[in-house]
Length: 179
Image 1 (cartoon, rainbow, N blue to C red):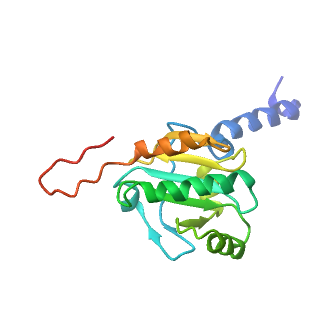
Image 2 (cartoon, rainbow, N blue to C red):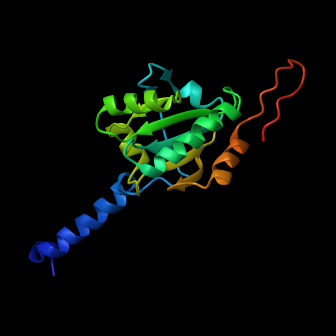
Image 3 (cartoon, rainbow, N blue to C red):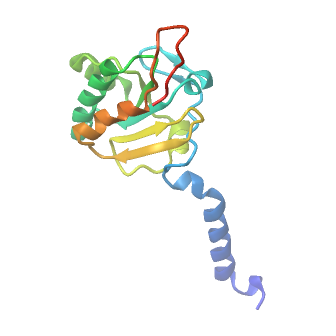
């Protein structure tokens, strides 16, 4: 039987090939995958580029102003940013809200100052299909996902993320220690 005699068979084969070639944009990013953050501009005006991501591990949290679990996780994130040295870990959050105004108001109301980037098509494609919010990723200096968490993390687990921050030693002669 030739392919032209059975168009359904041909369409099925084409569909399977498309899934194989384009599945990276359909599937969610997982531990071991590379997450290219590239150049980012926060709503607070901070600029980030590749050189920022290669200096230290990066915590990426995806959240929304309307998400109840995100409210608790953002409280923990705010405390974590105060607990670790600013030079020990990159922290970037990505809001999935459709408009920036509610995000700015949320940050002001809660007095949070962690950097927030609005989700766009490039970031959405890089991250892949999400199960919901909050989602949290820890990236190593090469941009590989070394930890992924979905949903509200218990406080102890969240604060354990500090282990991914590198020690920052102020003494110029002592070696830097990585935890």
